[in-house]
Amino acid sequence: MSGLLALLDDVAGIAKVAAASVDDVIGQAAKAGAKAAGAVIDDAAVTPKYVQGFSADRELPIIWRIAKGSLFNKLVILLPIGLLLANFAPFLIAPLLMIGGAYLCFEGAEKIAHAMGWGGHGHDDYPGKDNTIEDPAHLEEEKAKGAIKTDFILSAEIMTISLAAIPTSNFWMEAATLATVAVMITLAVYGSVAVIVKMDDIGLAMARGRLGLTRALGRGIVSFMPKFMWFLTVVGTAAMLWVGGEIIVHGAAQLGWHTPEDVIYSAAKGVSGALSDGSGFLKWLTKAGLNGILGVALGLLLIPVGEKIITPLWRGVFARG
Image (cartoon, rainbow, N blue to C red):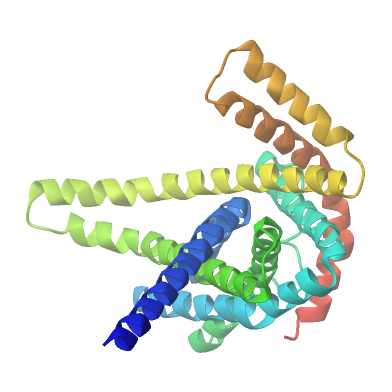
């Protein structure tokens, strides 16, 4: 009996350690995923356009297909690459993060330039843009492939940011945390997208209901969704610029140039101290704002490079993919 009790005690101890490890993985994954907010919000804002023009019964299958492609991107391709970098070439993480941050700045600034009519139409003026695909199945195939390719860029940024945010640990903890980030973010993004694209249908169904209150609520949902999509785009753009600028500043400090980070930190501390903001919110807001301004400036400088060099090269490589 004493041997059985000892065995049960050992099992209970192992279970506690395993539970603590699971808690650590989930906690680290949540913190790491939060660092990738800019790319995550942009992913959720961009994806609904890939189901525009399709019948309502094809929207969810297309989103599911893109979500599976996103998981493949993250778990099968990017996770092993990230672990190899972390364990064998950690010195490459900061430069790769800065490249990703520059991409976020470019995307955010291009959205602003497009909205202001300053150009920034690099995603719209390419050969074959106006070609019409008559076969709905072929069109669905092309849209899904395009969405998965776009997701690869955003997923690479999300996984790299998450990898940099994970505390130094053993290989399996890092792998489990990154895998958890991949699954959590994919579920959050594409679950949200599924709800967003079906809200119009839900609103229309409610608008045809028998109760006056239900009909009014349905009409309100239909009227609200375009405004919500606009708001989501604005928030996603702001988050991209803030996160992109912060990545550039932090990466520069890691590579030895501390001046931008020190200036921004001092300004944020000064504003917070001058206004006696004990919560630190103004300090964070000032840092985010200054990083965002830097992101806009850098992104505007990168627009000609992105549109005239990088985008044509990208299309040349993947046009037949």
